[in-house]
Each structure stands twice: as structure tokens, then as C-alpha cells.
Amino acid sequence: MKGFVLGLIAVTAVTLSARQTFRSSAEAVRLDVLVTDGRKPIAGLTAKDFEVRDLGAMQQVRVEPALAAVDVILTLDVSDSLSSTALAALKTAARQVIGLLAPADRIQIVTFNHLVALRSPLDSSRAASLAALDDLVPGGGTALRDAVFTALMSVPAPAEDRRTVQLVLSDGDDSASWLGDEPVRAALRRSPVVVYALAPNAPMFGPVFVPTLPVPTPNGVRAGRTMSPNMEVSIERSGGALDSGFLRDAARDTGGRGLYVDKPEATAAVFRQVLEEFRQRYLVTYTPSSDAKGWHPVAVSVNGHRGATVFARSGYFKD
Amino acid sequence: MATAARFEADYDLKVRDTRRLEIAAVMLLDAAGTLFMSKDPWSIEKHALAGGIVNRLTALGQRTRAVRNWYMAEAALLEGGRDFRTHRSQLADARSLFPNDAGLLMASGSGLETEGKNLDDAAAFYRASLAIESGNVECRIRLARVLFRIGDAAGSLAELEQMPAPRDERLAYLRELFRASALAALKRTPDSEKQFVAALAWTSQAPYLGLAESMAARGDDAGARRVIAKQLAANVDEEPWAAYLRGQWRYFAVLLDEARQALK
Image 1 (cartoon, rainbow over the protein chains, first blue to last red):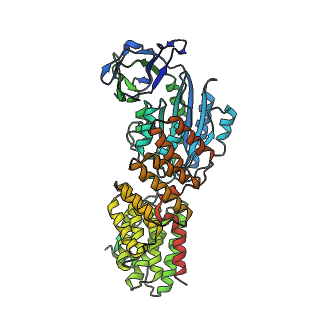
Image 2: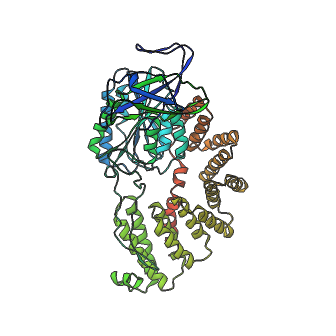
Image 3: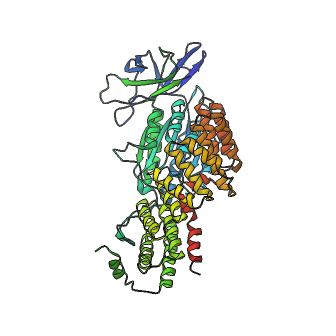
């Protein structure tokens, strides 16, 4: 089990929802937590099911279903490595996500190749968001880290009555970012946004040349090799979950999940799964027993549910 | 028998007209590049044929400008294709045929830099190239960037600050950008942020990102968000940094043209 964090929220006698009230002048930590049985979310958990350690110390927690309105940041790779089939599937999936939003939910669409573009801002109408998907054309390199950071910083800090999920679809092969892994991961760790990273398998993307032909040189003939304009598939595959790379780390840091999309046609189903899953998470809130500044590692576990897997942030910064 | 002779036999390549061979090699490399850009695997076949012809030319003792320029264009193509193993071996051959060639030395360093391995060797190639042709602005900028990546931010900054201002506006932009990152690595945050702002004169993406990341890292999330809002509103349509990461590939057409010119 891996623990993950959310951010610190300053609370001043604010009622977050009909069921959630914080003490006045307290600084509470709110964790956005998913618990699964390995396949699907486990519902009906209460505070007594959770064990939360902050800086190693057990915390008194309050738990409630995450019912707040959702802001979705769709962050879509439209680089040269995206095939036309994958692009069509991507548009279908994105349209489906828009259709699944509740009235109070909002969506922002960001696309990227080597440049990051805001296609429709968070407060757009559904019609504007749908229209933003019409003119997507694949091309260019892949600035994945730049895109994740830009998308993260392009929305306001989440209000206390909202939750934000950044849904990133990319092959994970970053060929053009200015920012490195660490600065972007640091920004994610400071943010309450949850990242779900979806990585299509290689066939969704452009052809990778098969190395078969000999390459002659003045010193003889050497084996041929792959020539691919943009991509080297860098993400390993294992049981549908990303097990390496920036996307995996970004999801892990924020308490989200990294998933593979086996084929273009499955994109819509995976998007739907993610959105439904995001609505079945828990908000675990506590006032930390230590007010030490700096990084607070947090470990979240669930008692009495054998095989339960917990997705939550790994810690938070206290300034 | 993996030898040049076998390749010649395979392709019935017994021609001794070196001019025709040079023309054929350049034409085939041109075709390989065009096919590569359209992701057509036949690019490999064309490249193989072109390489075989150059192989024949060098076996015949050809050390012409056309052959040298062919190697330069080929290196750009191989860098674009991220075929670094062939890039290294082909340029090793080219350097043995054309020793002390500043362009081939720089191309050798560029391949290593783009691959991200043996950066010390990349720096050595750049230094060797600059020792022959000190006025090569891109080579000096690349040397500075490699020094930064090695961890020598002070050395990187010194190279960038001592060099004359580049006339090429893209190189001028990269110089500003790299100065900013070197200053950031040296923990000179205010200077670094000023430098990122200076790099914004080009209106590209990386300086906004560098500035926003710096602000976020020091806790100014609101400031970072304002910078990103400006970035998204700027309608950036070019990022020289992304082209820089492709090494010499962006010069493939120019280098191929130089090979053609050498045939005239």
C-alpha cells in the first residue's frame, strides 16, 4: 500500500458540505482517498476503517464520501505520435466525459505537442468544450511535463467545495519539455489536484520502424535499427497499471492512478471508469497532531478489508 | 562476410564513376530523409543504399567536399531518427576520413548530447570543434548547455556570458534561456527570474514555464498562475528549445543542400 497526500486547507468555520464542518481557525488536512478491492472501489467505509499516520503519528480522522462538484482538467497529447485512429477515439472519449459531467461540474481542455494550448477554459459552456475538440490535428513533439505543469497552474487553486482531477492521456515519451520531472512533481505534491494518467499502448501511436535492414558503413555492414521520429515507448506494461515513468509518478504523488489503454476503442471506457471512480473516493480530514514545517509524509491504510488497495497522496508540505 | 565487398556484390555496385556515385548517394539520402519524415520504413533501405555508395566512394579514395557534406547530412538524419549507435560509428568513420573538421566534431558532440549519454565526451567534442572554429555560436551554446547538464552551472554561465551576442534570434533566445537555468542552478533566483523575463522577448513557452516554476517553488503559486495565464494567452507558435532537442536534425535540409552544392 502506498500513502499519498492532498494539501493543507486553511479552515475558518466553513461548512464544506452539509455533512462536513471544520473547527474554527484550525488547519486541517484533507486527503482525497480511493480504496479498491483490486478491481473496483469499496463503498461504505467510515472513519473507523481508516488508519492515517502523519509524520508517523496516528491521527483522528473524519471520513465522508467525496460528493463535492468536480473540476476535470483534460490534458491530451496530440503530438505527431498520435495515430488518426487514436485521435478519433480520443475525441469520442473526451466528448463522453463532457456528457458525464454533473451540472455543477466543470471541464477544462488542454492539448499539447511540443507546445501547450488551452482549448477551452474551466468556465466554458459544454458546447464550447465540445467544439474545442473538433479541430485537433496531431503533430509535433511531446512536452508532457510542461503540459502537466501548465494545466495544473492554469486552473485556480481548488475551492474547498470542489475537487479537481487532472486526466492526462499521453504515450509518456517526453521529447520536448523544458521542465524536468522533479519540479513538476514538486508542484503536484503541493497541489490538491489528483492526477489520473492514461497511457495508450504503442499501437495507438504512429508506426515504430522495424529494424531489419543492414546498414552499410565503410567498415562493413551493421545491423539495421529503429528509426522513429519522435517516440521511444518508455513505459513498461504490467497488468494494466503504469509501473514506471513520469506519468506513473505523477499519479502516485497525487493519489491518482496510472492506467493503460489497450486499444483506441477502449479510451472512452477508461475515461468513464476514471470519472466514475473519482466520484467514489473518500475525503479523509484531520487536524495534524504536529505543526512541524516542511514535508509531512502520510500513510493511509484500511483495516478489516483484506486485499484493499489505497490510493492517496504520499504527504504534503506545511509552510 | 559482412564487408563492403559483400555489400557491393549484393547491390552489383561496381561503378567507378565517382561523380555519379556522389550524385546517387546524395539523392538517396534525400529520399531517405523524405521517407523518414513521412514515417515510411523504406527510409532505412534508401539510407542503406546511400551508405553503400559512400562506402564505395571512400574505398576508391574519395575525400571530397561532397562526401564530407554527405556525412554531415547523414548525421543529422540519424540524430532525427534517434539512431545514436549508427550516428556514433558513422561519425567516427567520417572523422577518420576528415580529421580536424570542426563541423564533424560538433555533429559528434550533438549526437551525444541529444542521446543524453557521455556528456563529458560531448563537451570534449564541442571544445575540439571550438578550438578550430571559435566563432561557432551554436557550438558554444551547446557546450554551455552540456556543462549545465553535467552539473557545472558556473562553467555554463561563464561560456554564455563570455560569448558575443548571437545574430541568429533563435540562438539569442536559447542563450537567454540557458543563462536563466544556469542562474537558477546557482541559486541566484532573482537573477534567474529576470533572465527568464528577458527570454520572453522571443515569445515562446519555455521562459514562462521556467519563471512560473521558479515562483511556485518559492511558494508564490498565485504569481505562477498569473505567468501561466500569460503563457496560454500568448499564442506561442514556435519553441526553439524543442527544435534544439532534436540536435542537428533541424538542419538536415540545409546540410543536404550543401552536399548538393558540393556536386556542382
